[in-house]
Picture 1 (cartoon, rainbow, N blue to C red):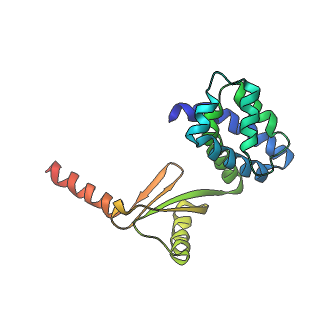
Picture 2 (cartoon, rainbow, N blue to C red):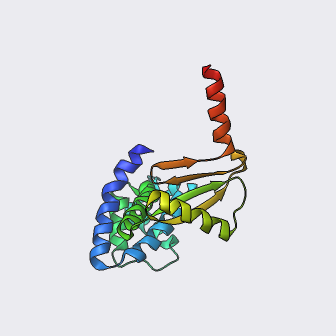
Picture 3 (cartoon, helix red, strand yellow):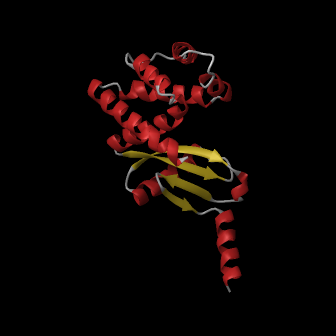
Length: 179
């Protein structure tokens, strides 16, 4: 959703800048991932928009659901999100924070979709070629989707490399339909 992305970007950038200045980037990365998972839960989303709860109650409830240690500024950050009714943007903030972190580290996330489960050796072999192609260190996120029939689909940032059988069949269909 482009609108959430636009809303989340300033939060992610400001948070990354503050975390970088205090050398707490990895703590914030962990905290944001947990907060993103929590805020993605449908029940939590419903409670966060319940008009019967005060903003203080919403903040306390959200912080109460967190299991890991939070950075010192986390309470203020959550307070800001609750105050501005932006808790729904936490997954997008976490994603953009990770992009900023990876960019700073000279790496990127490679979302690899395969028709079948890949062994660690296969993933590493695939990463070697992909890192040459994209020119950055890649961190793999592998998922299995048997609807692509065979091959892999790799997304790095906004670039997609689709060698799946499904994509090849679609290209063949389009070629035949155009003739």
